[in-house]
Length: 100
Length: 314
Image (cartoon, rainbow over all chains, first blue to last red; front, side, top):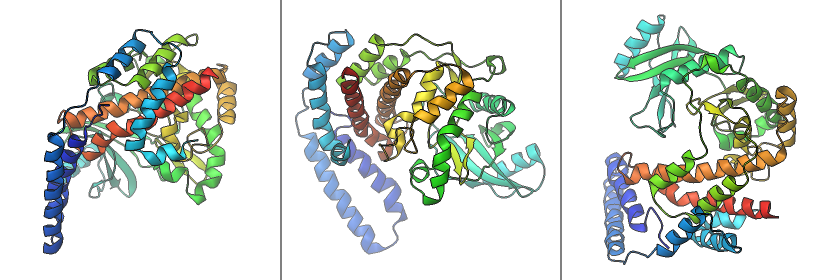
């Protein structure tokens, strides 16, 4: 399952935010140091994610194209819902849990 | 820059001008609070980036605000359009007192009485908006449902749930109603709310010509219920008095099934909106974690879409 932003794109955004907006405001030397260390740790995650193989989203693209073409056999909604739930468990589990 | 702004405002408005203060929020427009001879005013000014390419220029938004004000809609009184305010276009309007943060409107205890009144008051204002003569706002365009498909294709990511929503909307379209002037973003969060209820309607940048039922249903979208999902009308109350009052005033006879249809359309539109916001970050147009994460949080809206479809399927 492919998902944008990818995990790597998200770590990149957080690194930019910490470096560009948080770090310049920190005057406490100890906090500054610890933030730099945290950013370094996040950079490791970022590089490690780069080494992962890109996930294949061909099946998802096929499904999307079929629905666009009006090819919606029984069971399509169930299949789509399962995919959405799987992504929701990563992106926003609390939303899924409290949904009613 | 603030000194320059103050000078231009001084020339445009006259009187004693306080130092402009930039208010929080607003991705596409800046809001500055300024007092002129002690009168509280708000300066709406273009920000560096545009949230959405289908938005009005500030000049046209100002003209819409004037037309709405003339039609008796509760809006901040429009005062002056300024084509160059320290390098960007802007306009000045009255600064209304009240709550505009959706999350607080649905929760704050002192607004409990206001929430009781809001469904009928929201219908009152929307009926007036939908009666604005199109001749007063000749620059407005008609929005087609198909535009959502174009926007999704520009993102280029596969989202079967959104496709399924679009498919259902194509298959189940109600008979089209004659287009009227619509607000285009009529929901809690774009209203000023005081203890006695609705004080003013804000954010007219998405105004266009459209099916009135679409505008009527937009406040029902779950994302705009601000964490109170059991209250279908924007997290503040039930839909029935809102629909009843609107029909009573307009004579349009909008049916509950039409609200269902356009509620789904609102969700599909916002699911795509989340992706286009994400694109602004990914393309480097406007780098921010808030925009980036919308790409992932859009899946909440997709979940709502599949649940609505399940419900419609019975």
